Length: 191
Image (cartoon, rainbow, N blue to C red; front, side, top):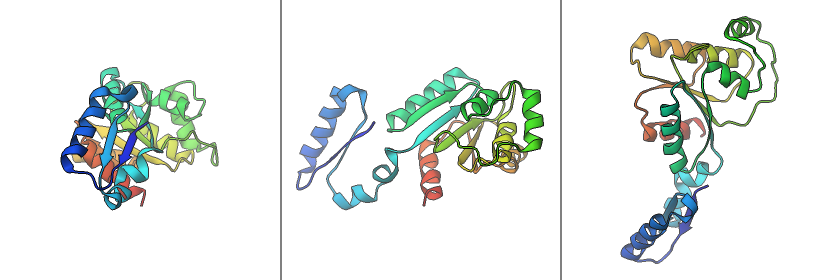
């Protein structure tokens, strides 16, 4: 949850003091934003998309998952985590016992028209045990998943980025993740 306050005819000093006060008290750990311009607030990315966006973070590094989760949660998003590509497929409702079965599943393209869990954005790491990011994306796309999937990789080689894109990812980001660029990319995709 993200709390917003719209303040009109407020001096800038009072406005900044209120934001500071609210953030210092951490109102139940919810991030707080104040805006003294109704048009600016109405046109902001946060006002249009923050409340509803749900992320699924897929990375084999628990530290990376927790850090990304914390940063996105502080920006007002809801996040769930998956520890690898196979866990991602399970969270998406695909009952696949192991990576070998997953690759056969990928070729068959079963479950077209399946009802998917509600995730607005899936962020998936590249190199993971069991199933890599591109393999997982290929399986989801072959199964008919049409939501936003963004690859995240520590490898900036063009071949690695292309591998993600040909698997069906909507875009690929390099680590460390630029959260402003991520928000801008999502904003453009949701237009």
